[in-house]
Length: 310
Length: 226
Image (tube, rainbow over all chains, first blue to last red; front, side, top):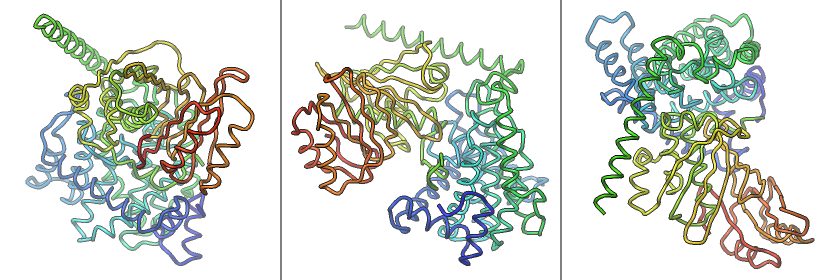
């Protein structure tokens, strides 16, 4: 890749007079040894999976495998369409779509990790709702995914994108930054504006811990994806309006590294702190363990029955 | 750079809920299956660390089984993989261990069919990426991101030169190599990650080299099992 930082990325764009997605696509093809067309098609198939996940999640009452979550995307979707919701309807849709994809993930449905499975709702939420709103083509959305990927590549290699390493800021925070920067470029903003959107977004999630109840990618992961989509829209608007990240985005990424590295283990995807260890969180874990034990003994009984029939 | 390309950020396409506990586990199962070189009759899976604690909630058991059946990370049959395994006559047993492991997300897969047996230990290191750390008692490290040749051979001078000569003649570039032996002039094994596909003909040639005991070939992005 010709860039290691967002500053370098924006500079390459200026030097060559190309948008971010174009630089990413060219460098990707060079790295993989495949043609740009092949890489394009692969990304396009990923966008297809994202749209399918949105449609599946929005219309489903299916609960997650644990039974803890499910149906919230549908609830939010119907509310923002019918009621006089506080969010403008398309914003509500971005939120509902993000919840939808996260719920599909929790129910063992098909998604694309963007950048992880825990944060897989933010980008599809922002992208699919924006496509419907502005009438963009699928190819335009694929451009956006390459742009988001370039931003994520810089964050991942200078900081982290997994909750176990850097807390939720590394997963949901990165996803919001990627979605915000990409949306700026999709709406015709400059590479510099896209980079500012990343910094603005990341500043708002610094310090967010990873504290999933029972270690499952459900509570609070799913709602954080919903909020994340709304934040990405806001950050993109700020950047397009001309708001700049006073602390350069690359420096904000370094702060995420600093904060995540200082985070105690109990707040990094171990389920030993935060929401996971609240009285209710602990009660849920206890209940899940009992259910598991029960289903195991039921299975054993069934096996014994099978044995006696032989 | 820890992350090499755009698809390590956007991707993989996968069945949820966790890229490390689900998608990575599918890939570990698939590598074990390709190392074994066919469908096993029995599979024993030992979970360590975080996987031992949470494999049920993340569907790691279903994911590994799906990999053993050669399902890809985004195959919608993954949630039903235990059912498919039973139907296909593959007996799968899961166990957990409290022993410390090299990585929080580690598992050992032992596959059997008649007298044939293959054991592999690997780790799911995040984002669906994996690292194999042991194959049949040999410390061999590889990621399965590239076509990978595993050669079992005697520890004799010239064996590696013979293998690399054949690869070189076929124009196959080597990206990474790892060699381990159980003792001086005893049994040895070599893992070779390549940039290009290794053809069936080439695998046959390598198999017929002097002092060669056997070869396995892992190519998760296509390729045929040996």
